[in-house]
Structure formats: C-alpha cells, structure tokens
Length: 414
Image (cartoon, rainbow, N blue to C red; front, side, top):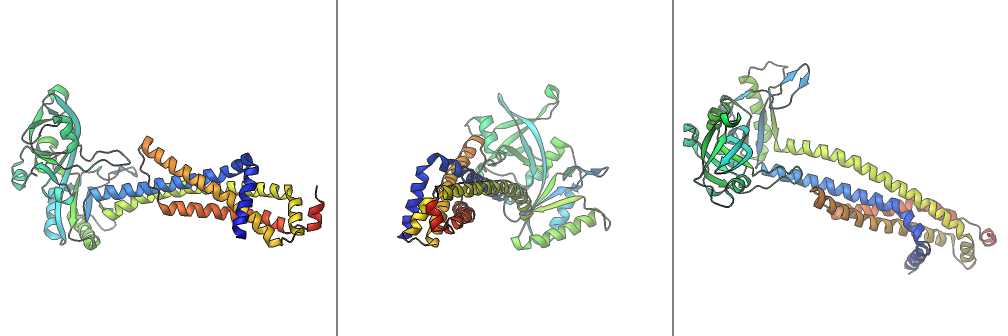
C-alpha cells in the first residue's frame, strides 16, 4: 500500500510541473524509441535474410567461378571464367552425397511477345535446377533432359514476366522472342513457353523480383545466346544438411585437382553454403545494428543524466517538505524510497512513450521506405527494463541526498 501511495505522490509531483517533466523525459523517450526502431530494423533484416535463404531451396550450396585479380585488386567471385560442364560432371560422378546438381549461366536480354517487351534475367539451367531452388510449376511443365540434349528453344517463364508480356492470357504454347542485342540489326531468337512458375515473391529489402525471369535449357543458353563454354556457377543440393561440410570439402579438393591448382595457391572458385551466406549477410546487419544501438544507448544515458539533474533540483525545492515529513515520523529510507520511485516513474513513463514512438517509427519506415521491421515483445520488455534501470541508477544519488538531510536543517530551509 505504501508503494502505491509513493507512486501516486510521484505522479502528482510530475503533474505539478508537466512541461519540466516532459522535457526531462525527452532523452529517455528518444533513447528508447531509437532502441526499439533499431532492434526492429535488425530483426526485420534477419527475417528478410531467412526468407531470401529459404528461396534458395534446402541443403543448397553454390559454386561460383573464381576471383579475377590484377595488381592485388580482387574483382570478386564470377569475374573469371573457371567453371565448365566438365567440372559439373566430375562432381556428379565422383562426389558422394550430391542429390541434385545443375549448371547455371545468366544473361539479361530484351524479350518481346506481340507488341509488348520487357528486359528480364535469362537463366540457363538443367531440370535439376527447379528441384534445387524449390521452384514449382503453376501451368504447363518444366523442360526435360531431351530438351537439354537437343538444345531446344523452350522456356519456363516467371509470374512477373508472364504478366508483363501476356497481360492475363495463358502464356503456355505462345512464343517470345529474345533479343540478341545490337538494336534493330541484332536479331532475335524465338522460344516457346512450355511452363509458368509459381511465384516466389520479391525481396523485402532490395525489392528484387525473383519472378522476373525466363529459364531455358543451359545448352540452349550457352550455344544460342551466350556462345560461351563456361559457367557462371554450379548449384549443388546435398542429401542432408549434415552432409554439407563433407560434400563442400570434397568438391573443393576435386576442383583444385581438376584445375591443377598447386599447393599454397588460392582457389579459382568460391563455394558458399546456405549457412555461410546467411551468416555473412547477418554479420553485416548485426554490425550496423550494434552501431545504431550504441547511439541509442548514449541517448538513454543522456536522458538519465537529465533525470538526475531534475531530481537534484526537486530535492532542493522540496527540502522543507522533506523536513516536515521527517518531523512527522518519516524515516530516511522512506524519503529515499519516495524520491527513487519518483525518478523511476519519470524514466518508466518516458520508456513507455519511447516504446510507442519506436513502434510508430518502425511502422512508418515499413510503409514509406519499404524497409522490413519486426518489433518483438522481447525488445519492448528489455527497453522498458533498461529505462527503469536508468531511473534507478541516476535517481539513487538525489534520493540518497534527500534521505541524508538533517530534519532540523531541512525545516529551517527557506
């Protein structure tokens, strides 16, 4: 009962100086709001990464062509043509634990159907690619091994590309023409659409549309579109998740052997598993989250200093009141508890307002900037607890100062 009475006294003290209380709480409000917003952005980014990794399929690892280096400068994975179909066949033949494997080549071309056209990604792959990347068919069918053998001019189309070119009509059986570049003199190659893919959606963060694509047999893409014998990469799906490290090591050893890379020399390829891709992406986001979180914590500490300052002023202003309470029987610990509860009430009220501000800011960022946010109950609980801790830490000294006042001196204070 005494505790609730102290809270009522604390709120009355705050309401006596509303403007001063609001100004004092601003630091805590913005600090907690920044913490909530930062954590929401970080959790939203992690959720986005999980979604992106999930679109890759299960137990998937990607082998990219190697780094090209000149003068000590790396141009990144895929900048050098070091992977071939022979590499893929060697992996299929000699590495146990591989369930599916598909080469991958890519280009971006203008696609024309009737009077409509669009620029989209063209992926050259084998039938295993659909199983590896968890693509499912909506209408029609995937292409098959005979299409690979004969380099057929058939294609499976993504939902976005289909809607752009065919505007609601059935694309299956219709023909699209893939521009070969060079403007009007470059010519084009006709492809028959044999299937429409179920949608995978867009990346919440980058906005990249996974459904804006045209997938064709890799032999067709390599011979008719790219005229190149090398691959952009190789997609591998292992039998189980537990087998991935062993399979990855076996593939690395095999490729070093077939590429005749001497001991001590760097690989001319890069292998990335789903876990590595997820950890790499998450590590970058967590670094930014910690940085922004540190700024938010500084704001909270500044807010705590403001609370200490205003509580010291309050103790000075109410010295005579403290003396009267002590004269009527209040013990030093009662005075300490009263002022400490006032400081905690001040910081917790600011914490609640900061939580509302943080949740509102997160929703605005999602609506206006399309940034993924995810406000978790844990983030709200920890932010509120931290604001309460700020009130205890920065309110203790003024409360202790009030509790140590001499009743006689306090009653004489003017």
